[in-house]
Image (cartoon, rainbow, N blue to C red; front, side, top):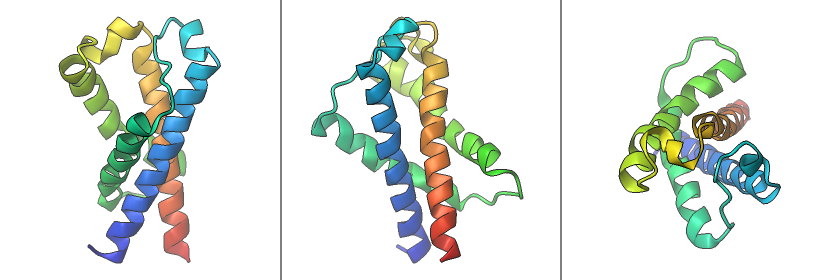
Length: 133
């Protein structure tokens, strides 16, 4: 694996950690439940570890060539990959929570978009900062 590949994996893994913390905090504070979304995981190693590893794996998207868009736009575009997989594969096929996880609440897709944006902005920012050094 190249130095850049390791950097992108690390940036994606850090994004996975921050994404997971955001999901947990929103659940622990009752924010998701307030909006009728049943996402409130316990922060355990069994829940956290795969999310960090998958965040790192999704870091491969950082290899895509990006035009000179803003950090926010690039982060959002990058986060669409994991968002679509979560909404169209994981929730309906793996977790049995219906298309887009709607069985967890009607606003579930918006929370997934937001949480994956946290991953995207973390991964893009950290990868760019590391490459500058």
